[in-house]
Amino acid sequence: MAKTKELSKDTRDKIVHLHKVGKGYGEIAKQLGEKRSTVGAIIRKWKKLNMTVNLPRTGAPCKISPRRVSMILRKVRNQPRTTRGELVNDLKRAGTTVSKVTVGNTLRRHGLKSCMARKVPLLKPAHVKARLKFANDHLDDPEESWEKVMWSDETKMERFGHNSTKRVWRKENDEYHPKNTIPTVKHGGGSIMLWGCFSAHGTGRLHCIKERMTGAIYCEILGNNLLPSVRALKMGRGWVFQHDNDPQHTARITKEWLCKKHIKVLAWPSQSPDLNPIENLWRELKLRVSQRQPRNLTDLEKICVEEWAKIPPAVCANLVKNYRKRLTCCNCKQRLLYQILTLIFSGVQILICSCIIQINS
Image (cartoon, rainbow, N blue to C red; front, side, top):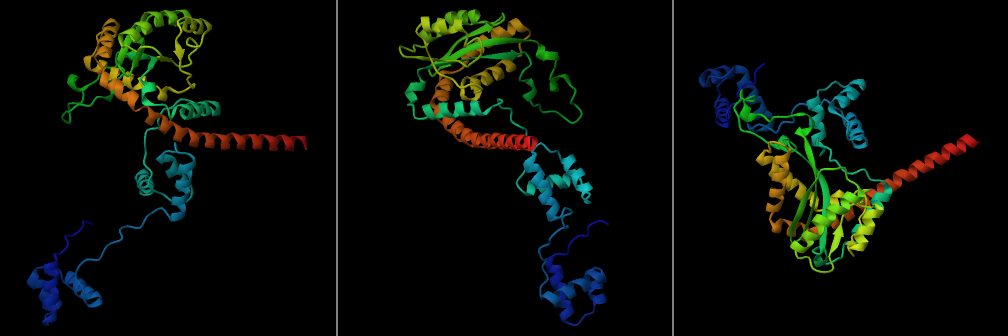
């Protein structure tokens, strides 16, 4: 049945006034053009509550009982990857039949919403402990000390790597018009490996790695690109080189080359790409390259070099300036994560010991 239109307050007041002057339900309904049952309901409400305005409505009762709500909330807290369909099936087995929309609304009312899971490095307790130590050791370092660091890293650049983030304005039936589509090919249409470096003074050289990376090749890259970048950016004396713990970076030949060149290396915790501000520059570079739509890999390499050089020095300076905030955030997260992992691993050890005792007994 369709929902009927509510009477205005003035109409309801007129019905009550006519009733007070002695007119009957039928006469009032005929005079105002309303149903007799409507007139009667309004008058009865006035007699009972001495008012004609509508009271707040509670709405339809929730189909999921508080006990069932606690059940699905408990499962979502323990298993955040649980889908709405799985929760619907759990409720159905418990005797409550609802839709996915009802489950989603219930979760949102309790402050939960569906989000994309963040991708983070796989961290073991040793990694977390090392990251926490790095943050604590350098948390009080002055800002000037980070301006002396030359940050470096490698990244893979694909021809169609960032096109998936684009949006278009189109009409309803124009979704397959060439202007409104994104061409895709397998494996990203080819890719290249890049090595780059930067400091608070700006971006250094960008090198395309065309052969299999080894310790000897890495030393050659550093000799041809790192040292000229340091001179071009006028780093002066006392600068520090940062790179991660890839096997090529920690190879004996690499360590000997760095020692021979008297280059001081920043001790770096493993599995810590988020601590390297160059990751922000890689994203900036990929966005810039995707806008120029390279035609082939040769064009891709050329555009990468051009766009890398165009990144303003102010962007680099701002990343280094805010490095303390990055360490502070890491410090808070790693403390909590280390406590959680410690509890998990201690629980596993207790479980293993109890199993061994039971087996021996």
